[in-house]
Length: 409
Image (tube, rainbow, N blue to C red):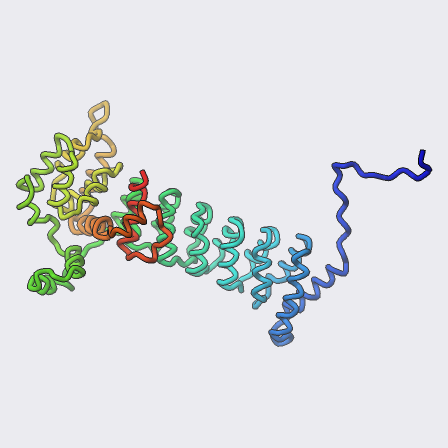
């Protein structure tokens, strides 16, 4: 038996007690933070940078409470050193929250760095700050997180760039709750709304058509003399031909009738009534001045509103909608013989929209969903490659957004 005193062992599941906070460290942190916060009249840039470097080294191993104290001290600093600000903003949310919530002097580089390297909680706090810039908004929405997207869209002082809008439009395919918020943004343009239309619900589609289906009268007046010039050149220039096709008043393709087995668009619609086939759908597309890709998108849309746009743009009556509806084997009435709600909604859309405005929507779809489909774009759509959007034009981007889901089914 040993004569030595028994060892006082702590239970195995007990963690060793934390050492008491160092008064010297707390005092030093406070003094260093005080120096960093001094106005430029009291400390020069080199002194501030040197103090900041020393403060950063201590903060790396400091406790959360110590780091929080320094963060709270920096909230009122007008020109906090960038490296120190980035360290604080990347910290756990308990440390960085006071700065993100109250510090008005944070620059875009620090906010962007935080948005891209911190957590969703950090991004949510940035999203509600006043006057966040276009670049900061892009960094916030890049991860396509629904709560952050909604916070950005609700922030009326946030400024959205075209790139951010494209990200948001793409994100709404999965986060449909964001669609009403996005439609309220003043930055949204017809080019975005017409693509968003394809996965929007009935209410959002109605809003898009009411707000963004614009007339082309101004363009038609401005380019009225250009049509004769292009005709004299036998439409040799493909760029001007494509633009003039978008602007012109006539929707139906008269030249297509000569090659069609049908005498008119009305005859093709009548034939479709007994059963829509791929061949009839293609003929209706050609006779309507559309590419088959656009026609296929219209006829396979589950909501049916594009059919109303097609009929109104080409001068077809509501009876044509019912004929196409029947040919597509869609339900027409309920058990009591009343008009099926979806068909009734589509007929209302036909009454609501003017011919010229319906043509604007239809031609934009045709422009973006067919003429922009280059081999490279088709490959990108099939591969789901939306990272290289900058390589493509606006209609090409629209086609990628609208058709990528179709090619991956």
